Image 1 (tube, rainbow, N blue to C red):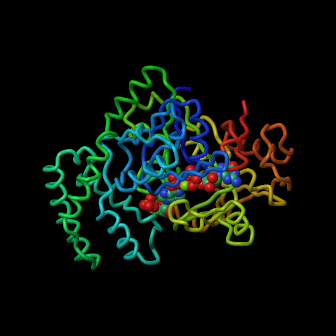
Image 2: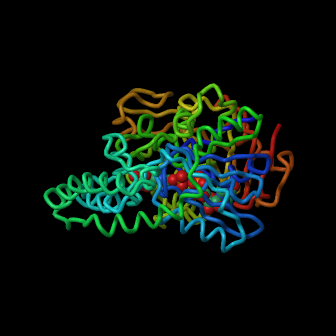
Image 3: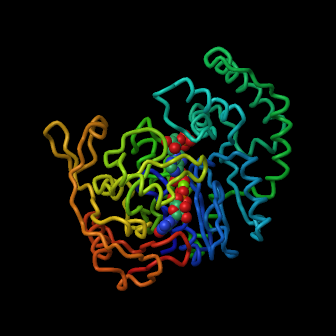
Length: 424
Ligand code: GDP
Ligand code: IMO
Ligand code: MG
């Protein structure tokens, strides 16, 4: 399948990095289509760990052209540092291509992200404080500064000075914070411009040409379906479109160019930051998931909230993304539980919900209706053939597949690239 979208079906951290890397062996181009350095995508190859935030997870393969699409927001300092880190580890970052239309994360975005969260107090979203929301806000209010603006110092300075007047009013008058000077920002960003210049390209045209030539292309999403600005648990979401529709706009191709939509689903579920979470476990079982699954954020180090797999949410994800297949990750972590539970519906105020509810209130006050499945209580992390898994583990995978109505084509049993079982 020439064009495949890789999308998270939960609240992020499903293992998109691992799966994208795995599929990249056969890819020519891997495109990130949204988000920024709020993402943390981990790849492990023969014990070597790579944590990527902006650069697509295909970068480890020399034949892959990694592309940062127009739908992303770029913090240039972070991107340059990520490229330098890769270089120091023997991976050539000169291939990275960046859309001229991607928006820049500016210092005032980071500052506003922090003060806006502080202002919200106990209502805070729990953002990564990387300036993501404020950068997308500027994009949509048409105050954003794009990568291409860096290459015209006059336009860049004019845009910056205009927008900074507005931002300083907000910082000083609303958030009781200090104003920022344009001079140092201009100086810093024009230095970035020179370093980024060789990487900037018409990425939409590049992808179009690659499709025309029958190349294999992966469109890699960040975050997850339930963090989507439209389809997620608003306002506890990120400010972009992780869902498959975002892959088309965020990379600059038409929706009919997409052949395959692969949803990455963790065998249980996690969430960082605030917001509703019906199957959350605040008990010893949840604690064990955090510990065994090393559920701490790649970007912020925050502890991830954990709970049983939520089939209601998964079916929703199948629907809003048009999933054609699923990669089920971290099945090995479930080896440590006697009985496994999956939520098949929610109950709230006497009503039963089989579909993701219309009103978000339900997600807060519902009780999940669980089905119990037998655990397997043996280490499966060394298994490489699906047929060699204990019968209970196979049943778990088949259960997920039946409930989702979409084939589970990949099962992951460990962080390493090799700890993967392919089906069909
Ligand atoms: P992403 O944001 O979706 O790319 O996921 P993260 O990289 O933030 O989080 C997934 C974590 O689980 C990383 O530390 C991965 O190395 C790890 N991981 C991925 N797949 C598996 C798996 O099948 N088993 C185990 N034990 N860990 C995995
Ligand atoms: P990957 O790609 C998990 C969460 C934040 C917060 C909300 C909004 O690694 O799966 P933002 O900084 O984006 O404005 O924060 O979204 N969040 C993530 N949670 N994985 C991610 O990325 C996330 N990126 C953002 O914790 O709740
Ligand atoms: Mg992550």
